[in-house]
Image 1 (cartoon, rainbow, N blue to C red):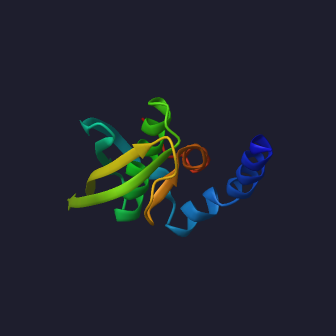
Image 2 (image 1 turned 30 degrees about the vertical axis):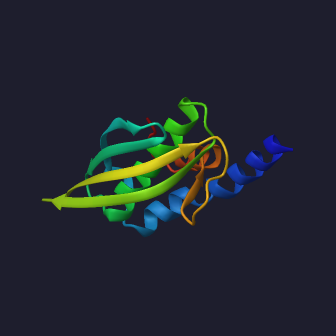
Length: 130
C-alpha cells in the first residue's frame, strides 16, 4: 500500500517540477553550493546551505528542507519538524541557517515533514539532498 502511495505521488509530482521551474523564469541556472550539517543536541540538527545562479529565498529554504529530510532518513528517522530558518542574501548568493528536529514518529507542530515523501519530491524537482 505504501509503495502504491509513493508511486501515485511520484506520478503527480513529476508533472509539476518542470512547470514550476519555468514559472520562475527557467531555474536551470540554479547552483546548489552544498550543505553543512551539525548535530546540536540529540534530535536537534542545524543545516547551513548555500545557493547561487538566480536562486531566491524559496529555493534555499527548499534546499534546507530537502537536506533535513534526507538527514532524518540517514539517521533512521521518518520525520522532521522545522524549528527556524535565518536567510542571508549577498550579490545574488543565498544562504540559509536552518534548524530542524528529527524523530521516529510524527512530531507535534504545524511544520512537520514526512522525510520519505519530501526526499522523493526533492528528487523529482532536482533538489539535491545530503
